[in-house]
Length: 483
Figure 1: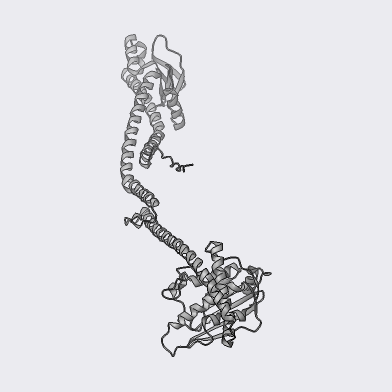
Figure 2: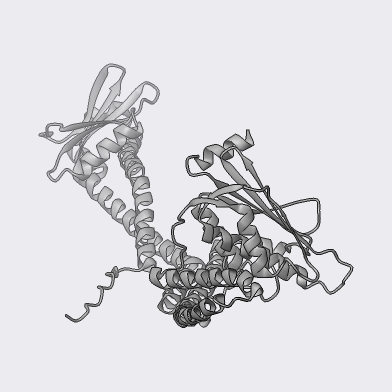
């Protein structure tokens, strides 16, 4: 069945730029609407106050005493000018009809301008705007010298004027919103959107081939948050590219090691056959060294077989047994040729019969790697006056065994300490790959123990290994040691 390509994520129809300008318009319009209600309310009050002012001016011109003799035509003209159907003068509790049409309509709503609170004005303005049928208003003006005017008017002129005012406000709000949105869009487009788009494009381009260093983003040098994001992204991409290159190198190296292991196992098997024949010779020197040679070849064959069978870079689970630590140290010294070394003195400070609960082959590899590193470090010294000494100590602290491997070499550099137990990064000598320490640390952790480089007053390097006995919980034992 052919492979089906994964569906690409659906892209939204609008990008950040369109969303930004739309949201700006909406937010400005909302702000304008918030200011629209009090504006329309104030306009309604001003409209009614102007009507009352017109009626008041007419009353002052004609004189209040002459209203009874005002002809009908003058009254109608005055009412038409004010836009009212009746004008009433109130003095205290007494009311006097100054002018009115022959049949005044009934009043639908009272507009008392003596109470112009925001809530009441806004409610009355909303009622006027939503009144689709004509209504009659009774407008009560404020008291002046104990007198006040009242008008009876239709709400149609008021509603028409309010509608025109509202339309003008909405048009002005829309223009302001669009202009503000365009200015904000241009500013944010240059400050944020364009750099973010470039940042996103750089991420997409890099994701297509993370191993290509030319795809790593080049920071623009900005000092703001986007510049910080560019710097961090470039650092992360550099680290990821290096990690991928290293992992590819390790994968290739693992394949090569598997091939070498396969052929090396066959060669070691042949060498073991020859060593078995050599062991049959009656020579005393041969009889003394042949068992060690056979054991070493057997250990190498088992290790190659385990690596190929397991198929991973991880060590196998320890097969723990009680082993003699002193005997393992002597085997390590024999393999490294320390018994009769020309310049290095080997000292095993382990008591006779000191037992450790561990996998014998894996413990041998740990000590061999650490002692070999020490020997190679001290072999680099050319001055014959320099003291070269390697010693191994062992002691028991409750349910925990502590092993120390110390030398008088040049010690471990500060740079090597940063990645001391990481493969291909923690080499303690020039040209070293750091595999010995990485293997030792993995084996010790598989036993539930720890390995560390400890500081000491004497020169050289000192590694300390702690191995717990199986019946003892290592964390509890470590806390007991601290306590």
